[in-house]
Length: 327
Ligand code: SF4
Image (tube, rainbow, N blue to C red):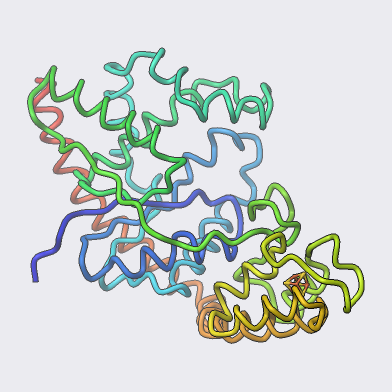
């Protein structure tokens, strides 16, 4: 059956993936595999744009991401799973695109200033950080991907890719399609402290966590601060635990809401119920994860074979690029 288009997406190997990744991207990606030609990239060069000093864990982190991907249902029979640095053509295209990309476009990228403020000057002063949207553009267009599944916050980067494509095509002819954004509905999973789930906040529930760790994390989880005793009336709309019920215990959200608001339900019981549902939903991912942890050769084989497939497509694109640029 003809596919609807080609997708490129990826994750940085910054450590084990968490529930936010699972519900936010992995389930969406897994659902796209039958309809689209999917290329999923573990973007290790992107990880270096800010963490260039801390490379000891990089190889292990790459394998951990691959394990999480496979456990969550990304299927090497239907998709190409590969590591960015295994396909050197990305670096060549990045270099060539950097010739046609004005620095002012990169400086005005909203995440540039935002992340410099958040991460600090020391880690963001290099060219690699300023130029990473160009590398990201190369990652997408080297596969001539026409569709990129993204969150709304990533739209400026995709828009920059589209501008780079227009400029390149304008100079050298119509080599690249302009990739389109695909926005998908997905659940936003809050961290255990109620903020966005993020490794940097230390508030994650990781796919590699053991069930008892998850139980403990949820037991200590932030709730509505005005509900101190069981009989107190609660505000589920201000409680991240209730968001978890909405994802993992959908059928019971109405009675839970009512019982929280009336004070009939205490947070301890409420958390115990959602923990049970969450663990049941995660059980197949956890089981597959354990199998893959015990078979690292299989994981490395998947990435090697993915890199081989990715290289073939990337090499063909670079032939088009060199011909168009008369190199
Ligand atoms: S009862 Fe549940 S929903 Fe209500 S505040 Fe406690 S944990 Fe949150």
